[in-house]
Image 1: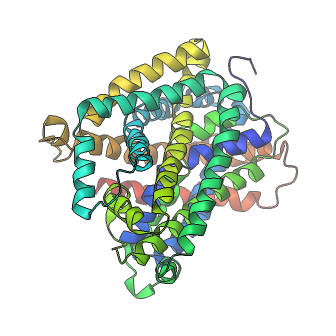
Image 2: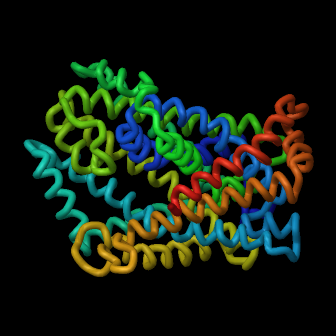
Image 3: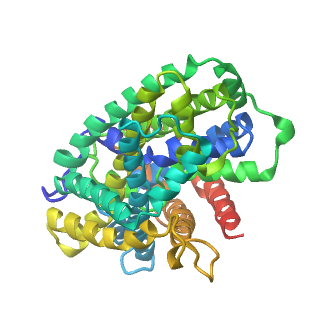
Length: 447
């Protein structure tokens, strides 16, 4: 591998890939989705879905990347040159770029709320006051563009420094910080009065409340949580040496991602129940409920800043991996220098993010697109964060399972792993089970 591309050490790959998977989907979306879907039953289906859907596709992406040593476009082209399969790679690169443009907007908001928390702006806040604070924040166009630019610049700075000197180095710093803050918040939340009710809601499945939408929501959360479908794991896999054990590394990535999501629930639900709040508050729980909760709970002045710092770190580890997808494409396919690729692509993504930044709360074209009856930000999340990833993952599973063939993927995995006793089971899951379930997620999103 050239210096311009770089490579990971084993621990660097696990931490970087886990950092890619761990993001706002774990710490924000997972808890509120659990709350909206009745608690323990959703969690049970989610854990099953990680094993059944997400892990087989994760292993397929990493294996494809390591075998070819290329970005998503180059990986498909290397195995099936001159065929339309390369367009699946282009979809992944485009998805990464577009997701970065709106994800950095939401990430910037977490950074803004960290500053609000650390400066004591949650003191004495009411539910109405929290809603007004959020509305005022997202309706300030200059402030939204500033936090968007700050987050993009942080992301570009890390990616421009290279794979080992940037992504791996900062992952080794940021991920332990994330775990440390997470454990501090966990201890504080579990020791609150009334925490037991939140734990029961979170862990005890209510099978009487079963409905098909819970299965679809849990499968979708498991799938999107691991950053699958846009070629991130193909790209990261391309930096992994042949001596590394791909199945074991993929298992650790899935474990860390799932562990952090589960711990996030142990933080949120005991805290919510301790204050008598509604666990089904939806996506507004992060900005409309938590500031009030932090003001009421003991040591909230410490917990609040730590929580939003945690969110910001998790978001940064994700935006780093998202930017790396189009940067790797520019390096491999266009011959660009890494710094040039990082700064140019990051700058263009920031410009593309401005409509999303202006489309969160203010009344206007970007917040109420007449044709779609939704904001620009919501539309971009639906197209690039849901539909494109489902389509990408579906074709990746089909490509590895049926075009490249699982026997070739297994041969690649055996380099560094030795004999694979579960190879047959993995092949069956990738070829027959995962595509059907991903298709169900895709159709439910469309319908």
